[in-house]
Image (tube, rainbow, N blue to C red; front, side, top):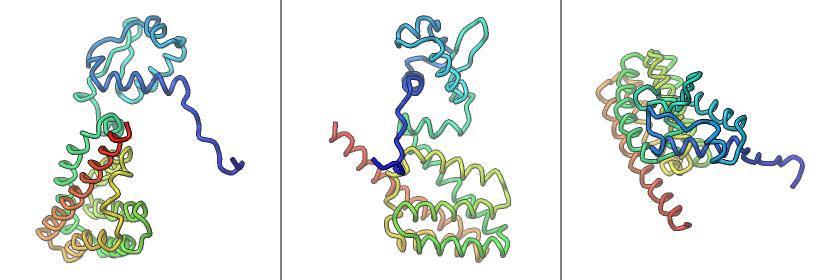
Length: 242
């Protein structure tokens, strides 16, 4: 291998242990509110030293799955009650079933964002949207089209004038990251991707709130259907490879 190619880093013992503990927690083998076994017992069970275990615990505490109480122990956090949307990429990686629930939020939030953008977009924001939708048509390859499409949605969120919509849009895109490659089907044809999304930009540019909501709903439903079909095919390929 050439020196410029680089070498993919191998998983460390801490990486493997973190992943194993995370899967056990998300699968419910360590229920919310329960305390993990004593560190010495867990270290013996996994064949690691306590320093390695502490490093893995630290990562899971940072991820919002564990909480450590000095002198008491390490408890599984009730992340569904106390956690935030920042957990979504990890949850999607654990179980793609979360995608369906994310899509439900995407439909409702996306239509509302388009409606608000139509009411509030400035001329400069409309010009930006026109430029970004043209970039979707001109993008080369599914991944580039997918990224160009995402930038249109970020601009729509900015056009609402509400920064929370911007953060929600970013959160939903981040949630897709673990399975993004399986969601590329709506973007394989740049012109088709452009034609699906352009009516939303046109409605926003015209200041037509009703049309913006309806066209956004149509866009979101159409792309969701295509993406779910892609996920199903990817799942069948995985199952067939086992």
